[in-house]
Image (cartoon, rainbow, N blue to C red; front, side):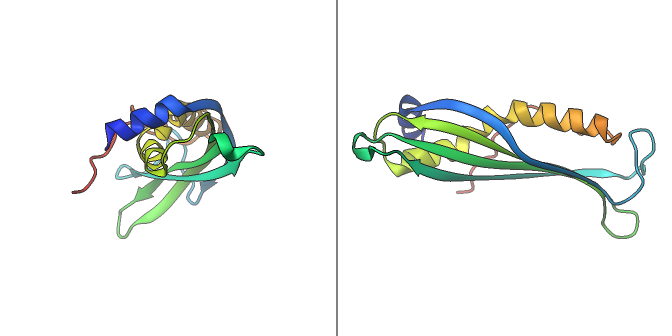
Length: 151
């Protein structure tokens, strides 16, 4: 993580919006919040990508950046072999305004390390609410902890 590049991006970017783009919930076995296998486990998913929307007048470095963050979890049973019991997935858009020119490396560092922190509270609320509405077991969605980068 390059903190200097992230700081450069933070100075040039403003969060405009975070919204739910798509979501799905699927049940493959008849499990509910009060009836599920004892050996059930939760697996999590995270994917981040960015789409750059150039403004009409890009000579001053201004543009809009839409980041797509896909998050999800699924419950699996490992009785005999791994079997998916249910899954929930959501895609959020975090929209940023870039006010001045910065290098692409700064934007990439920001996307890798900061965007998820803007989206995470929306994901957690959505996952808890949708799990309750679908009568699925409540997921474990703790505070987001950045994974160390492999060297």
